[in-house]
Image (cartoon, rainbow, N blue to C red):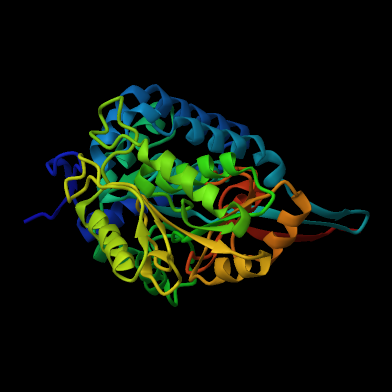
Length: 459
């Protein structure tokens, strides 16, 4: 009996979509056809590849009226936020804009004796394993530059957002990208690992859990296949004594609760300078109490259900353990909280780093707030984490933020903003957040390999 992947809607627990998984031999044959298409795709002029990718992006945008409610049904994000096409097109467009310069030959010399240069060559088959929380934006981070650089792409999307890869592939194919150049697949974990281990792919980009990232690296062990991973975080915010408290509270609460807290770079812990602590907590609690929990298809809803009941169960457990250990929960249980996927957003104080809620990834609508006496204490606490994706610093002093940023073990330092991905900057992390670098010129460097030319001219 063929195994099926099922997307369970968090709205009501019903099966929203299901697809049969590919058998191992079927998947290998399909990927083989994609590999065979790579040389012809890479031989196309760069400008042609760019135009086809941008046409595919536009075709996704033309589907946005269907995509927004579909996302709400698959993973619970309220329709009022309008989907992901803004960030989706921003990232793809930026990578298209810098492609010629980023992929240009590095010219060393061209004289009477030698022509020497370094050329960026596509890896070949790029395997993108994308997550459900921002299913379009995270996928395009790799898909657009990979295709532009001359690679072919195989996309495997998360089961929770089962229809996203299928829809993206359909859009790109309609825009003229050949079907064998951009292929969506439905695979189980064992087949995925087997394909990686057999060198079916030349580069693997995985966004997801630490456990998933470890599985990818184990599968690739000994193959010399490059594996790039982005595995989430426990991102801190630090509100310094000279910060704009109103702006800090508004932004950091939004960064904690948006998408029901299901953001890799969402804020999960906040440290506030003593003089501003009470005012910040008061404002954060007031903002959080204004959220409207409910059906994501309702325009009035500002926070929807978590994508899966088991995710909400973990957040509830972290909150309950913290409260039992002495933390204070400031938000009364909302009437719409059903004890399952619909979860009350929560602000916790009197927390410390002995509590799981301040150490393990929550990936839900909860944030702990601690008081700190100075920058040194804040830096020590921010670094007391297994993760390192982003950190959000709040101050009026740019130089102070830069100095503190240099001391934080993280991939990105924000000042007076949070939870944003700038495509001109490298998206990267450290520690259990994983390794690799997406977007920016570095994204192209990672999606290609250097090839050196040392050409001696005949005399």
